[in-house]
Length: 109
Image (cartoon, rainbow, N blue to C red; front, side, top):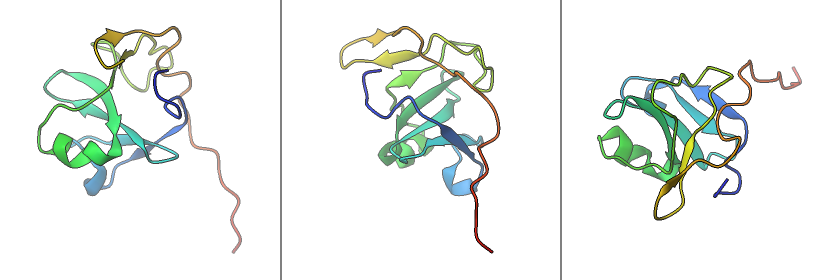
């Protein structure tokens, strides 16, 4: 990956203030990155969380992208693209590696 911390667990968020194009988004644990449905390109894309407002307003701003027709929840969703600053590349093994519930966190009650 071209960006440290990019390949990590992403958690679904459905609250309105996190939605893009009336769809859920998926956020990295460090909250630096998120994945969203791009209605203009009909594919899942990823960006830095600081660009959420621009993306919700309809601007295109991303540095990772799923291939057309790949469902983000498909565990075989490989072949994602990453923008390296000048062109889109497909590093080996990019994409969704696991889909499932987030591990339960112990809590004190």
